[in-house]
Image (cartoon, rainbow, N blue to C red; front, top):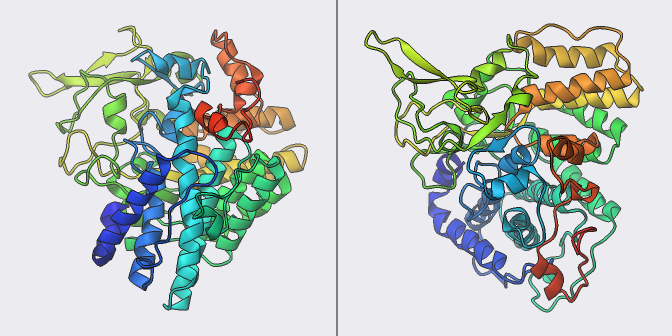
Length: 505
């Protein structure tokens, strides 16, 4: 993202840094629903300033100032937390990683509560930026696009918080967002939060282009907003609306890409993929935020890539053998999920492999991403992080059709086969009933989307999230843990106006 978007805004780089700084400062304040940023109209008064302000709001996709947060690979990352609190992952480092797997968290567990105070400031800042941009004299079409992108981002950030923590007040009034004395409001009903997220997505969809490529790749498009909206509808079990959103995405020119591995390599830089709908554009040389460190987290310390690319390897992330064994061993997607991994070459140049299971490792190596052939940095890679993909949309469509029709249609079968065919697998058996077809979807989403950040939401939607932990021996797999706790400081500093989630008091 940085290497494409920001290089086109070089004259406004100072503005982007300023706005990013205001976000960081805001996130260090009380952490309540309203955070003041003051009046930045003296800065955001030109088209260039508007571009810098909008670009700064995208930094939340990579966690803002967090080290490898957002949709990247570190402790606070949505992708990581989804993996480590579900059947997808386990971590060899122990400690709090075990607490994630066991759903053993409380209001003082920063790993879980951190994102609540990280993303609320983005929501408030977006309200102010929308107001600022509306007052600028500039090209009207570009202005409308900027505002649509901001609304899509606000919907996305709000939705991440809603899925993780439950209902929240989404500040849309710039005056309230900028007022440090604005009253603290109780959390609303879920329907209020959902309605605002839906409205923001719909407003964005009405304006944004179907997709972005080239220098604008990594921005929220109509397809990305529709995908977010589809996920919202599925979370709320609005199945017919989810089907309608999925059908709209189908009209926008996306398709299944031929090679699964290419989705997670430099082959898809700049929007080359027909399948990736939204991604974080990474660079190996721009610091620790807009970069891909997944391999450093997941490769064992004795891993040696056959290409002789030098790679940092900390050996933490694994996929449990129980989960790995669900895969058909002919599944081509296993090329990125290793039960045996290379550790060097013999005297004749033949690659030597280590059997991770036989060696007693906790699970298979979730490599997922290819090494960066630029060799610019052993730890930081320029391989992009996909957030939304068309394969995900097809599987969501199949699931939603199954729900709407109380069983699968041929169309639903066809969507699943589109995904399975690339993996070298055949069609599902005909004649499945609703529950049997759903079971196949549950497995297929694991096989296709592991380590992409959606397993937690999926298991919660299927009422399987806490049961997974209980089955794995957790004694803290209470049903209320489908929601994370709010930070204790938020509840205390609001004088209990903002109520803690049930079970965490």
